[in-house]
Length: 125
Image 1 (tube, rainbow, N blue to C red):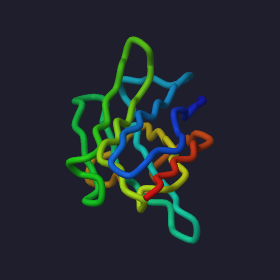
Image 2 (image 1 turned 135 degrees about the vertical axis):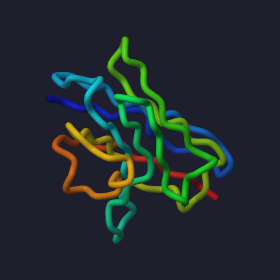
Image 3 (image 1 turned 30 degrees about the horizontal axis):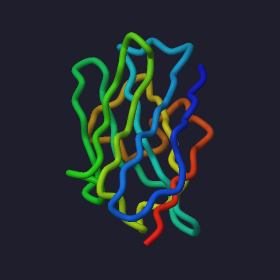
Image 4 (image 1 turned 90 degrees about the horizontal axis):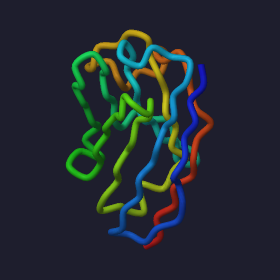
């Protein structure tokens, strides 16, 4: 199983970025895919998750209303559209996959079996 995150970069506050996670070797329809982020000196935090059997989506309070997670089953990719970016969104962003996950548990890193390598997002003020 491989997850490949891409799309990070440098953007000004208020701008947008779209991250993509390419998933291979996984039964996409039975998996939950999430985005985490880790800022320097901070814990890795779960920010968004899509539970693939019913397309339920959940978000952390810090990104709700600004970020949108979606999946493209034909391409086996999961995207994170990030709008109204703030300097505090600066972090390395990771995608992760869990074979079985209840949406309410999406923040718990231990439930995820596979991780991508991370992509840097930097938001300047």
